[in-house]
Length: 95
Image 1 (cartoon, one colour):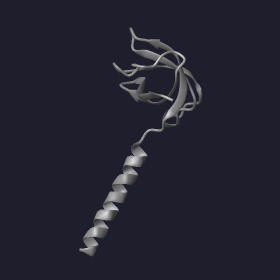
Image 2 (cartoon, one colour):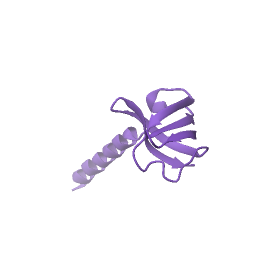
Image 3 (spheres, helix red, strand yellow):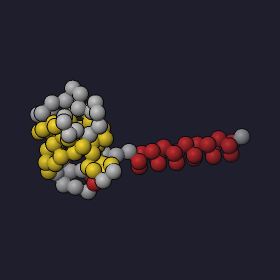
């Protein structure tokens, strides 16, 4: 029984470590433009660690509903990634 508990504990620790590695780092920025027609948002942001990009202003695609409650000038924290060849915001919230 003691060995079973040890094996389960090690398995849980390994799974937790794997989830932590998969979590994308959040970046900070300011929305400078929202184009609802083309579902594009321009963000003046800090470094994007997961994309190995320095701080800059750039345009990202976004999915329906992601910009609700956000406006130009809003300070945000977000995750950006490459989806289907496009730089896209995958998570975003106001700071």
